[in-house]
Length: 293
Image (cartoon, rainbow, N blue to C red; front, side, top):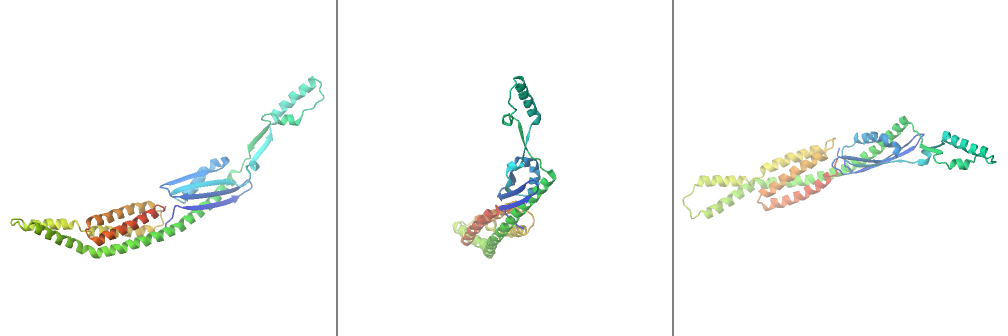
């Protein structure tokens, strides 16, 4: 199926440690380019995230946003550095005893001590974290792929509509083609005979051969046969289940080259007009193909 490179998907999941929300969007790009913004604690799982995306798409610039819906403070563990505080308490108590003070060690003073409290991220279960990431990412990528396929169907219909128009034009050109070289040959013969009218000594057979060679250079049958072959390949590619964007882009360049040759070789006014229309449609197809994976 034809797939666009433009899409959006979202996936949500949760476990006992966190709620996870994954959003991703993709746009046109020559290659697969994945950029992921995620919480620091998920950095070890970035390769896993990219692997899930790569398993389902092959082209496009993909921006991924990984968010924890819970407040990040809920994922923080705060605990006292008891060995450090014990040393401070012992020092305070020695001062009180030495000077026979009536004061007691004050909690507020202890809390003001630098590094008295240890703040660290709460450990999360690796197995359940991987499961949650896998579920949310698969959900998000699948939704994005589904949108890309729907957009791809629209692109396919539009491209086929334009190629059908070009094929009908080629059918009209095929009807004109046989008479073009003959007409060109007749006109060339007449012009040459007009020029040679005053000259008696020339080789008629050699002249006829040269005229035939020049007339053959205006024959477009070979280009028309190649165009039929190219459009047949294009139809096959549009039915493929594999990513075909690059192949379509290359094939369209070949088609455009043949159409240009038809225009340059043919002196016929109607065919020149047909070529202009075909090139216009090919440019529209080229723009659409840039969106295909």
